[in-house]
Picture (cartoon, rainbow, N blue to C red):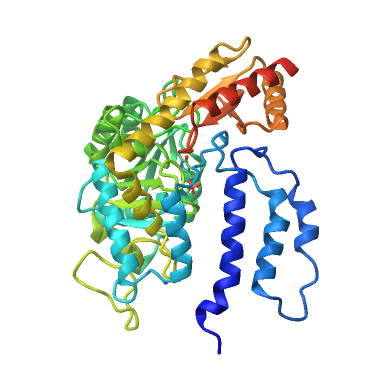
Length: 463
Ligand SMILES: *Cc1c(COP(=O)(O)O)cnc(C)c1O
């Protein structure tokens, strides 16, 4: 019988070689994939072989089939959607997470990953200035982290209304009023659908997409004020402008009316780690729950989000499962499975520990501030391109640009993507087509900014 090492050696050595080859190619390869999914499918979807294949051969074949269809999302010139790259320590840790293959739900069963995730959670709360006793659950991303925070809110406001959600479900429950800003991320509506809460009441925002606290007060008062259960969902980091909702004022309005306050800070919550930006988020710590991503600003590999809930007993009442075969560690910091929707999951918080351990406090601050600085540099350079107009106040990592009418903006976007030097997303903001830039990759440097600006100038000149 071969040793485990002998069994895994070849496949892991081949995977490591292909991974390094890929990573080496990222800074210089065109950012966009060369082939579309339909074309790649021909290679992948051969008839299922009748017999086994050597693992190392499978890995070689996989790397060769995938290569023409990979987007260089880790490139310093990838500015699409809001997508981070991966820090070396986080990637190494992610490989170990797969090799260890821990089902990370229980402290008793997988103490090493539970302890690493708890340590990462503590560092996170400290960096972001959030309540030290909050529960942190590691989710697939901010969508599920928002789901967790809003689910805890649903639990809490129905508790207060004297309704037993676990026993009686939602049918016949008091209606929960949910208030969101007009420019919340669409996944907020999605998670409200998951939660059976229906469509939210949309509150007016200012010209940068920040919720107006007075408009929130008016909307809440119009629908009954402090009467009946309510949830307010705020945003730290607007997709198009980067702007932050006025946390202090809006939270005050919501709490005065008995509402639960949740903050979607998928990328923007990290601004709280920087003394330069912390003031923009004054009052952040007063909310009841927060969602953020590690796979965006923190630059860990996909996938990882964090759901933070100030009152652990509420999130555990929502997601805890109590059966004889799950050995819990009560009382204590709670089991990982009590804080997220999944029972079985990978130890996706371990790369967060490694990322934070490698950056240190100053490294996190530097990362956040550098992303914002590069966004500022891009915006300043774009403002000098004839016909280009930066539409937002560049307060963080996001820049929205118009090149005239919608048609011209779309043609510039297409020309830029065809050029291959950089990748930026087309979007719509305030009834205009825009080219949207998100600086979220730790490796974006001054040279990437210069190359991307030159590519944009070429694209503008070509239309
Ligand atoms: C990215 C993003 C989300 C969704 O996060 P996922 O990690 O993709 O699930 C939600 N809200 C905001 C503001 C985002 O930027």
